[in-house]
Amino acid sequence: MAKSPSVFTRFAKATSHYAGTPAVFGSALGIVVLWAVTGPIFQYSDTWQLVINTGTTIITFLMVFLIQNTQNRDSQAVQVKLDELIKSHAKADNSLLDLEELEEEDMKRLRDEYECLARKKRGEPEKPDDDAKAKR
Image 1 (tube, rainbow, N blue to C red):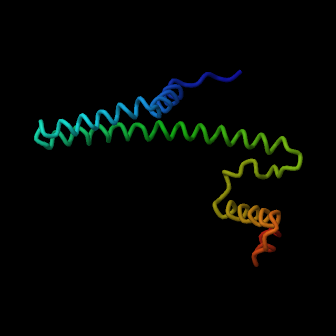
Image 2: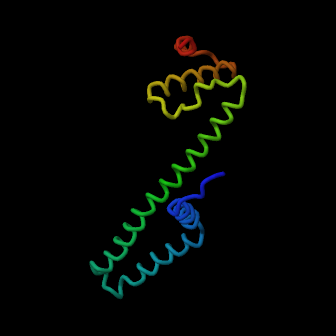
Image 3: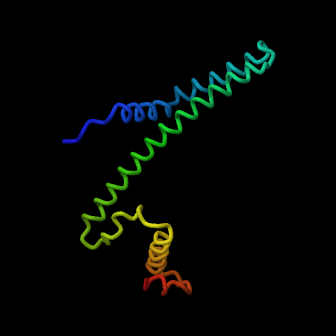
């Protein structure tokens, strides 16, 4: 039985979903327009400018963490689903299951090998270093 999500997870998920709606975009746009319209009333004062700067900075700062949390969770879910697909296919290379844990150099080597295989499958001419990549 799956454990229920934490309060933060539920909050982050709901906030990320809500923040991406047209209503929230319209509200944010309305606030910016209202702020711009009030410029002459407040004689474009430093305080008038500080209001929008402070508000947008705080919202941006907080949203970065919520969005990152949501992206991390989504990436992990996709990774697990891909791992399950690889694992379930008899001819699949199971060494690719934790590919995201490889060093950049190893990842590049594997990507080059698969690009070489793809070119061969499409019938494209081989590059001079394709044989060396395929033998690794």
